[in-house]
Image (cartoon, rainbow, N blue to C red; front, side, top):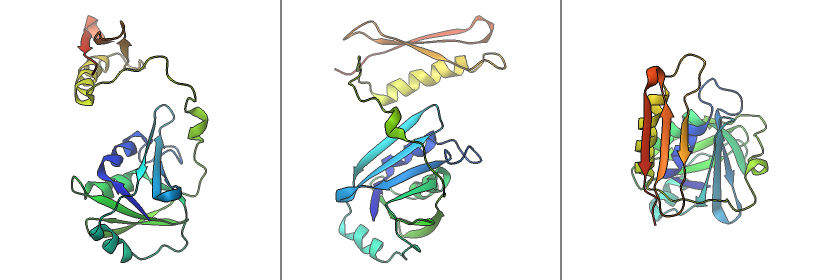
Length: 200
């Protein structure tokens, strides 16, 4: 039994989306030893991995004991990102999604609502093969809200590029303690330049 916090739901947005390539429209949900869990999602160009411990309270455990078991239990399932995100939306800010993994389906319980989610019968990509094993050359910490706001502003300009041109933003780094730049080019000579101060 896994207990996933609402903050883990964001990884589902990195899946390929409904009707996307199989099984990239799914989130790989894994139960690890010691009660820990790991979620992985990718669209083939971006990858997200979120992991953590199952930390249920007494009410969560009581609700989980009442869940109907799937046909056969499993330690890993590929669940459609859309279904997992829908279940997570029912949670309060500090709520936990109880998940019983099965080979053909998973049973989900969010805020007292029980649902069944089909498990995809496919082989997921080996995410460990693409995750770097050496430390990064540069590490910069940001307030995610500021970084997202600047990237959205840059993305709006980049999205105006012509048909067949991918919208692109460029990150510029001038060294420790200095702001990081974000630039983008759009249609008709419109450009964007932004700065984000890293956290100390």
